[in-house]
Length: 328
Image (cartoon, rainbow, N blue to C red; front, side, top):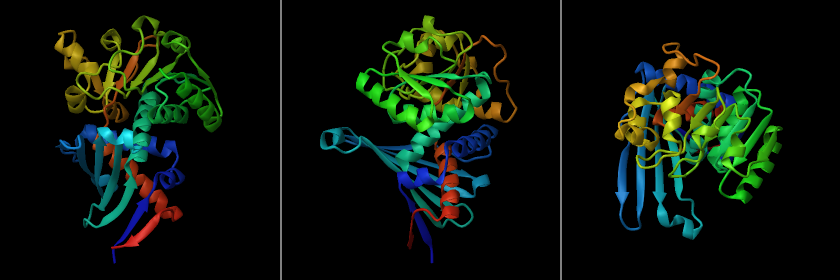
């Protein structure tokens, strides 16, 4: 009899810590950059009435012995009906025989793996004595960005900046308690950047959220907010003068305006990308070369991250007997 484990967001959180997910991302990105994993292009189904989109993202990694598929739905009218705009789930199948193994809350997996990717990039590219972190965006993604940076560096102080002062205050109160660090609210982006060692950009802004001239020397930047060709979360001046790393070359060159816009202007080519982060993790590409250069990690997210995160969550949940098990 096949047993399927169902895991809610809270149960996922009980099963793992952020460092578990950072380690899973390191493995996933190495597999991706070495070409040993399978990750077809995601399938999209547009829905006209009511207006929405469905995304299907399959992947397979032999090292996990799992097949994964994340399904995400985006319906524009949901907010008016108190339903989340983005919903989803991750399904896992046994990679040896195809047996269904688990269904996991997709939004929790997405938030964890997105934060953990920035955590990995921070571990590989930021200064070892990094202690101050600036977060742009007081949403769910901003929270896991800070959590992941704290998992890999000895962060003592964090600053949050968001266009909603109330959201910033709530973020600071929650995250200072959760992470046992000082979290303050900045009134301007310039103020937020004053002492930054690492910056995480996790907003829905369509235009740059800070001035390039305000960046401290030697800072490391993680940017996860811009994932559409017309959206530019970071100034192109910053992109052009940074040492640029990405999660997946093909994906960023097709999806993010942070790179596409300056490329269309003829300001840079794809050769400006130093390496994929998996190449750095595997020792196949260099990381930071000087103390004062700016390192920049651009991530749009790929299905292999969801598979790697879900696989370690399932293993931990099985060990702890967390979740609801049903017989198929």
